Length: 195
Image 1 (cartoon, one colour):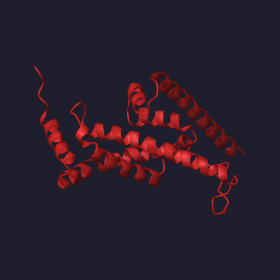
Image 2: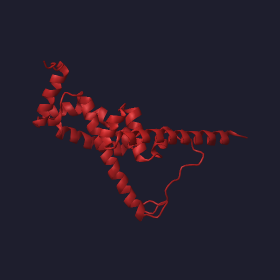
Image 3: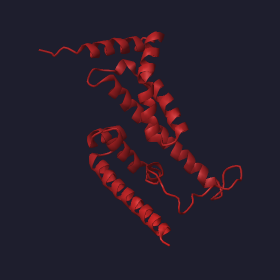
Image 4: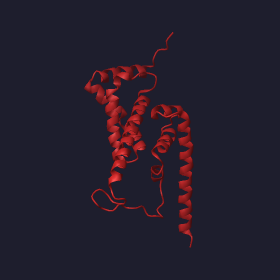
């Protein structure tokens, strides 16, 4: 005998069927409900505020366009979060490729319009965001998905199209690299305090 859906799931299914039918009021309700969560996840994964907002907008469009695929297997919020993760990671990869192409054509240390790039001070204390930015994109993604968004290794593997063993390796290597960066930052700070 099938287990009946809880009332919230039934209302979510009804909402998503209206969204799939392009009902403007239902679309507005869905966007208002998910907007903050989508924005938070996109900003977390993208690092920069502007890239996060771009990824959030793309994610909301993808969520609206995918409404017919919603099923009650998970909460509406978790379903939307998975779409946001996939969209933000795609956006990150595209941006990384674009920057790589741009970097090949620029003189190192200059911006496209000829100005010099600002180098961080050697004694500047680093926060977590700059440290995470120094990790490779796959390690950074794995750490953020696992520790910030609470995805399992198997879920990360599915979201990123990577084998679970590779995800585990990225988590271990990312933690190890972060530890080294933190130790290096701490020893630099200790040397700076010496008379």
